[in-house]
Length: 163
Image 1 (tube, rainbow, N blue to C red):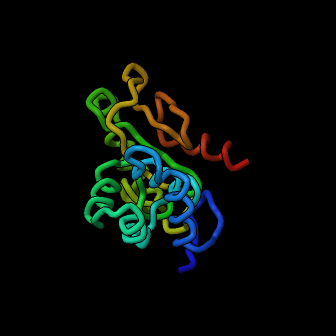
Image 2 (cartoon, one colour):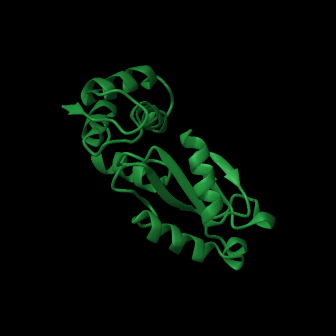
Image 3 (cartoon, rainbow, N blue to C red):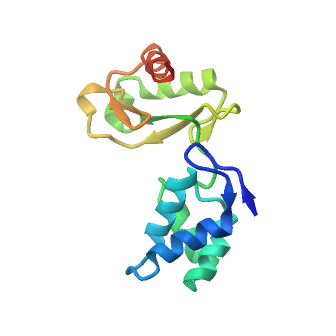
């Protein structure tokens, strides 16, 4: 099976990718998480078609592998956008407008929290506390935490990253 990757990797054969990740970590204790991280790091997500391959290679059930992928929020089963916006929706950020900011961004981007824009440019997601409560609304844009965010600040940060 040929895969088209998300943002981070090259197209290639999924079974070769899985086998390579499993071979690299099979001898480690509890290798499943490390293997899933490696696959996601290489292609940007863990494709659903990888689940039975990983399960067979590790002699686990598909439910075991699927359960781990869906339990940990940071594992993705779909390609992510070129940019990521994660907004804090915990109480402190809610008190200073996080919910309104989320609603504005969902409308402007045309995608709901937890999804990616149709052009694959931005993935919008939520987090429940970055520990930056005094500077809410807080968010992480392409891996960097920013405080006192509003729609204009986010647009400017994304513009800077696109340069």
